[in-house]
Length: 465
Figure 1 (spheres, one colour):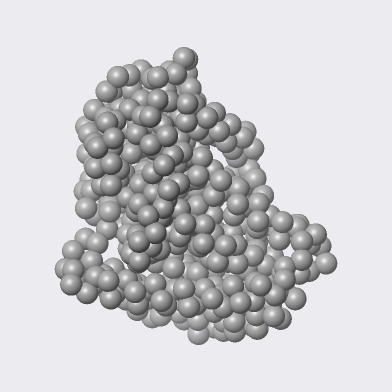
Figure 2: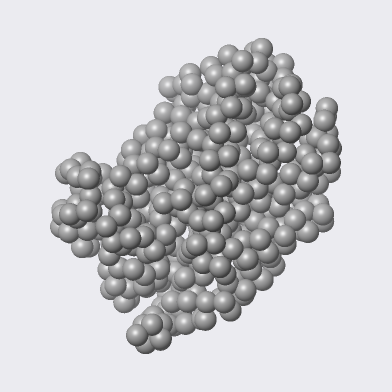
């Protein structure tokens, strides 16, 4: 469970949530975000936990076993999406490393954080920290699940305590009430914008790991009698609570330190440097802030580290299932992640494109998991795989319709998204045509490789036996 918390609590909570909430209306986004916590994240986490404990295989093996051998490629899709996110996520971890170093060397005093962000982000220097982030992730993954838990056991409590302390400090700043109003007061008409719902769904996936296959991968290593129903709720609500605290921390600080008009304009644009620029300003306004700043960025490094490790763990297991030896698979993955992450490290439009394309692709990942359950039989799945004898919490019939609803949610959002941007450029960095083209290419390649996946699964089974 510690490793799983490390996977889920990361920069997706502390860095991504504030900027996504800021760029999507604050309170309006929060309404959609809570809806999808209940209707997307919780049902999928329960399904992934159950599948991991039952099948004891990665995403490729799980889909081959539960959907049929023709659909092993679906597990490959889920692994690819995690890998593609990992390529640019390593860049983000590189940012955390650079700012941790800057905090130690006292470079973030005054306007130093804004100056460093402007100078460092999407520059050649970012490549060095991108490579360092990948090296750190590979080191832990090669040690296995115990290596992950050893890191998380110390650092997760430290990060949580820091976030709580900083959120409390942020709400006491002059003008913080404007940040709270922005975050918690919805404009109901904004909920007619499909992008708010789409971003709320993908942010839930980032917050909790629902639909990534990450929960499934860690459940493979769980004890047979572990109470995964209880863990599912702890994971979902605990992680989203951290995100909410991070949103309070960042947005209250931002509105306190910026004039209201300027804050609204910049928050609306929501640049990816929001946390990196403004949280140091909060520390600069605190007694002993320099020490807290070092501790915060150290904890943020480890939050990013454990999440990147989780992605590598998932993709590495999928590559093993495709027939590669584990150590070789992880090393090749790291090399590919560096090369394919270079454009994201150097070019902001490419980074934004990849974040959009593969974050939205998590919606299809959730859809695929829901299809496994429906194929097996929803009520039968709940009775045989979720409500086992070792669970203190019994899941009721509400889950049956919630998991079916995921199919409707995914299809409606895709259709609504296509309709809403019908007059927009198809092939721009954030265009629907650009996104679908990348998806179609990947799906075509994975379907062509389906036989390779099946041969790899058979080889792995022979090796393990």
